[in-house]
Length: 307
Image (tube, rainbow, N blue to C red):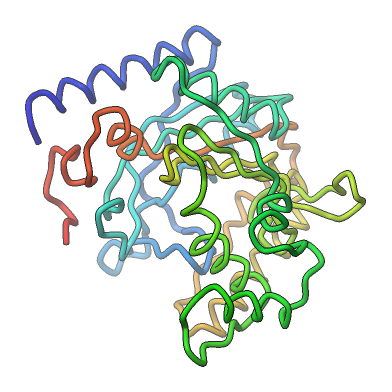
């Protein structure tokens, strides 16, 4: 990495910390090692030798335990790890900025994220689209009501995938938004919000203006590059455990390793996770955008995990 980019990363880290200090959001450190990795079938954590520990893919679980213990607003700026993540925009080891705001919903957190990015890139244009609006505009269907057969017809129409058949609605939606819709997003900062309920992850589900249950989560894209994922956080321990079990069933169907359920997170939710919203932002990708780098390797100061 060039000396100029080393300096740019140091400046960016100072700017990020100053942003949260001005808002009295406390910086916290969380363990890099954990007994329980995330259960998400699309994220594989690195296991450390054979001692039962995993390198964290996110500080989320540990931060939620702190929130339940009364930490107040907090943020983390730290390294995280994901197996198999390697490419022009991915690295096995990367830097994640994650923060939680008490009393915020997803819309308030989107506004704060926009404020942060505009402070780093003055004049940045911001767009907001519901997940439904993007599908209606691009594919003329409602993603919250469409059947698997209807979605498969769009896959056949817009993508050259031969005889490929999507196994479920969530897979079809992911394919269409990533391959058809996201490449057409406008320049600037784009928020996509109100995701399908089947993709709620750790977000709460509430009815939208049409009375349809939607996941109160969002994704942020900067000049076409996915940058951040946020949630109006689920605070129900029983529902969280049900989703963990659902993830494990999907992992079994896909032949993926089973992982232990994080009972400490469930207990934290049961004990009273405060109403809050949280977001995780890829700092290396942000530095790519601010510096004009074409690949993530240009902004990394190490070679670990590169393809």
